[in-house]
Amino acid sequence: MWQSLSLPQSQLCLSTVLKCGQSFRWTVVGTSPNQEYRLCLRDRVVCLKQDTATLFYRTVLPDPQPSALHLPLRQAETLVWLNDYFQLDVDLCTLYAEWKTRDKVFSSIETRFSGIRMLRQDPFENLISFICSSNNNIARITKMVQNLCKHFSAPLLSMPDLGDQQIQLQYHPFPLPTALAAPNVEQILRDLGFGYRAKFIQKTAHMLVEAHGDAAHSFLLGLRNTSTDKARDELLKFVGVGRKVADCVLLMSLDKKEVIPVDTHVHQIAIKHYGLKGSLSSKSTLTPRLYEEINTRLVTIWGDYAGWAHSVLFTSDLKAFSSYGVDAAGHSALPSPPPTPSPLKRKSSAPETTDVGLPSLAKPKRRRRAAPPT
DNA sequence: GCACCACCCGCA
DNA sequence: GCGGGTGGTG
Image (cartoon, rainbow, N blue to C red; front, side, top):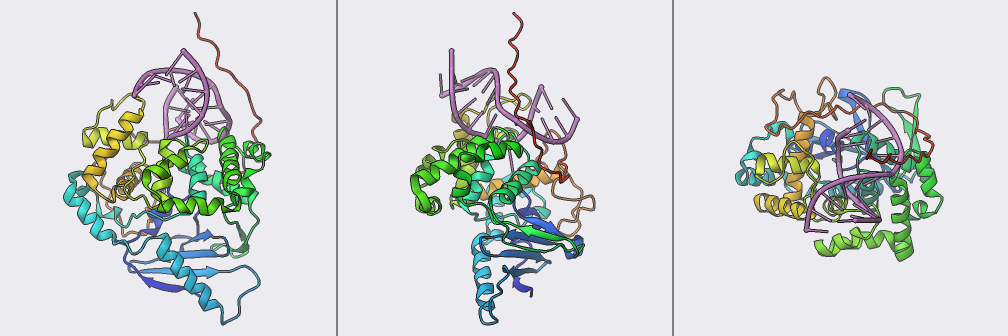
């Protein structure tokens, strides 16, 4: 059933990488020792777990099971997918070592933040997910993406929960562009609590289908072989896609490993530790000019894989100062992390709750802000 | 080029 | 009121 791949946690820390805000679709089942992560692809569900030296993987296929002859083939495909998705040909240890020699701040990062690498995601899923990310947090984005799959994509298969085998969990692939392009999609998404992003998603999907039809997906994939600037220009044409979201997609699914998405958080880090201008306290607006400055400065420091380095810094900061992603026992897959604060301290952020509720059926409210008193 | 502002929702 | 932002306006 389970197959294994020799892989130290210094090369990949599943619990962090799958839950740090790159992909929002991995689910965790089971509890601490027997915990596994599951992701629904187009034709199968991939299950993962790991110990200190090994990555275990399992392929689950929909009902008409393949003959005993074909099963090994499917499993081989999963292995190919894993190598691609986790970019396992990139040696993370070499990169960490390189970043540490280049950057003092980086060398102060604790070893418990090793194994953080960039996933190579599907560009459409990545694009839509990050359109959801504006003015938002990981917990809610995750819920939104799950709802998106549940409502716009037929379930591929169901399999039992780990804790309670009685419970069947359904797995849906990410919706195709055509499924999100229909005009009525906006209202459905609004009812699902997507807010103003509902329109962005429908419009973006529509633009994609309108311009490329069934080749929409391969158009996006083609941007992997396009220059960073050209690819970014293409992404910026979509509605709800600004510089930050475009850069996320460039980095996370289009192989632009040097790109650093600059959000307010990265902005703050840049000010505190890398001498960029801006005020620490006030919400000084991140102008395009300043965005570029931060970007070039950090690329100069970190080099070719700057986007990957940014992800490590961002994630370590996030995990050090929020309960997000680590439960009270701190059972990340890493051995007992020392409770030392990271040097990348920032103003404390509210811990994100993980309650799973029904999608809120909010009534669309139109409320204009009252005119200021004269 | 840059500074505001509204926009959905959830949690202060 | 404010968030891992964007689009529209002045």
